[in-house]
Image 1 (cartoon, rainbow, N blue to C red):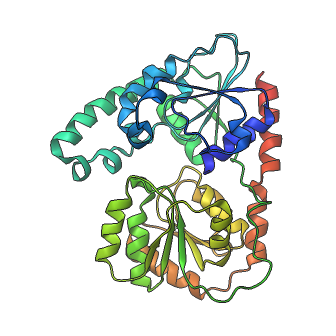
Image 2: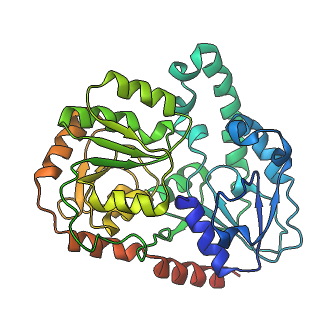
Length: 354
């Protein structure tokens, strides 16, 4: 599970009797803590093979989320990066929205997902009309939550810009009791690591090209619709690139522990991977935008890169490999993002809003 699922898991611990509403649920894809709750799904759940093409059903999401019947609940908490914030709750029931981001592909990252280089001229033009309607709907329904909470000051700014609403920042939970440094040295396994969904805005292609320029082997842990394209990029670029798919959490922890550096070449809303890596004592090379400005301390826990280019990242990777970072200091910085802090802050906020 990644950041959004980890946050849901923490909320499920806080509300063990809560019911969950989601457009699609793939059984055994989340933790037992989540699975033991009563889970309601939309009509998409019954479409054959929906797991393979649910992204193509995006224009249906507004109708489906508004179809959920939430009238029987005294408190609604939505975890939203697309449409969940627009669920219809009873007027007297507080609706607290933990907004990971306003709908990025409808607002400011259209080209990364639906540009002409991905869909062709006609396909991109059609999707632009669809996304304009989605953006209007997203804006017009932004008043439905009674309160917004978000994962970074960066996203709080986007919420003000697109929704004209204020948001309280509560950093998401990172399991710093699980992601810990190695107990003993394990030799020199010189490699850069990227743990990521393989989607356009993550800019995995920059990591591949940068590691080739820096002469650094790259290990990529993650899956997604960009896999085939990224494999073609890796095949064109001399160097060592290993795609691992979706390793277990234990395997990812080992990868963090022994990597030379963890990479974050895309602009993240918060970016849970840099914090997990730092919790394991591993420095981070990240684009100096978005959530990384709040989670990476330049020169102490990693290096921030000014521009999203392979050359700039290659130079930063080379500098990081030659720097003697204090892994204890890196770990200490990450501890402030732990689960206990999240549970305290979110519980206080919910009690204040109820």
